[in-house]
Length: 431
Image (cartoon, rainbow, N blue to C red; front, side, top):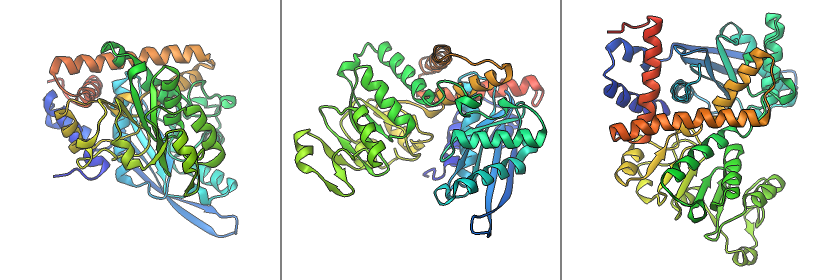
């Protein structure tokens, strides 16, 4: 039976790991559901004078290894199942990279594009007022996620400090650099994935100059990854955003694409205005338009899904031509697709490892907030590389030792570390 929801997909991977680890019934019970599922309704006054209410939630999955950690997303379709899955994945992710956090996630059901700057600030402050008892540097540390920004994190920190009459730079991460944020936070997700990919390619004695890459999603993580790969000699043959993508077997220049995307709002902006494209120019540059669905099935060596979840499925996994998939997005591959990709011997570096650079540098920001230090770019980059490659090698060791896929190895490693912490804390017996 197909696993349809994000949380069902997480449970499938979790249960596979729990069976291998032979956990007790109590250990399984503590891992299968979040510790706290907090819900509130946030009320604000709109600019037209009318009152409006927005459902909001904070799901705290597990804090055996340290304070809860995870982003807050603003989206009209942000629902409990999706946020619960992301909170659970965060608990596994922080354990995989060995940083002292648990997992959480939050959300507000709203369309931020319909809110003025004042309304957005009021809603952000209302979130902190609603959940303040459950937040704090030693309790639960939020961060940005879909449609949330460093400015929103700054408003939330300011509100928390007013309410608690404290100085608390470590209560939230992803803040502006001028307000105790960390250097390297904006590129951390992509850089972490890039370090892993470089290690993998080197380990297999491959030459980056002979490798073609497709990147789905040209937001912050996808665009940064495309630029890093291009700079390291890989040939980026295709990129896409929500409007579609472009492909050239000769390779494209992500720097140029990014420039036109900023100007026009689309990766196809160099060639197209809306649905009207300069076909002569495209022909001259040997470029063609592709849909997001077509992009996944293009001829390439490495595929980087960096946008939405649930894009590689049982329906298209047999058509994927990449030999390596690096998941910068959360949950891009379904368990049904995993089974097909495994049979086809396609390596999948899973989200809980591949995109953990973001939460790793969030940990550095939390550390800086607690100590009052400001790390240099070099220090952040050096420590990110150390943490992420140690995690990759730990997972790779499980892969070779147990002869299993990377995702299963990462889940086994993460779950084992969470359970070890639960045993130390006396939540479960050591028997």
